[in-house]
Length: 231
Ligand code: ATP
Image (tube, rainbow, N blue to C red; front, top):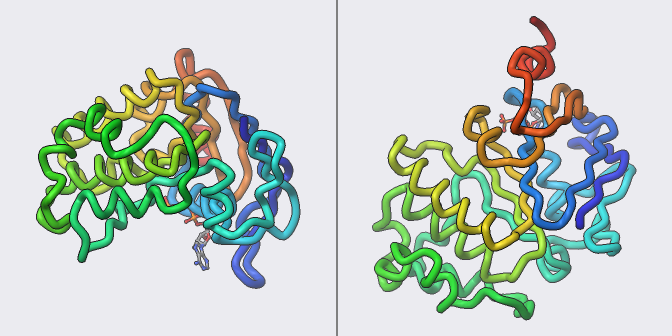
């Protein structure tokens, strides 16, 4: 579904990604894990067209998206639930969702379908997005991404800043999307959570993928070693 090949990128003279390669098949949930500064968010910035790679490619359903603008990437079928949710504060919940439909990609998702899968969001539809709790805002951010009818959904730190109960509610919602067969790449600081919701994981350190494997039988000691570079 999405194929990342030898991706190198950075900020000005600062190199950050040193040749990332990762293939994600249709319906898979892959967790991208790694310590602060490992390059996870930078990888997402390249995938979403906000940062141009120095070299390498990203192909989505055979389309090379690495030179596309952020809007073109959404049109090609990739959407992101950004870190910190980033809802439009002056808009209602429903208006935020409609912004996600801007590129009018055909597919399963529309307001009705989002409200059906996330009934909490339906109840809040007329509220200003600023009147919502963090967990509720996270559901709206996921719904907004779905409204573009993505083939691949990137989720950046879904649990960040949320109470444990809100994190549970967000991941119940996420499981519903998995059951729908959506292809997702998930960045998550909570490694236990990341492994429990994903089929595979890729661990980054210093701008490289240093370990990949099946999440179900992941060896925690091996992951800690990859994560921190030590035993
Ligand atoms: P975190 O969990 O802290 O977000 P991360 O794995 O997502 O970590 P990145 O945010 O991709 O890591 O950061 C990788 C490196 O790139 C870090 O050294 C960081 O300081 C640097 N960096 C990130 N964004 C920028 C930017 N806009 N300009 C310059 N350097 C940046």
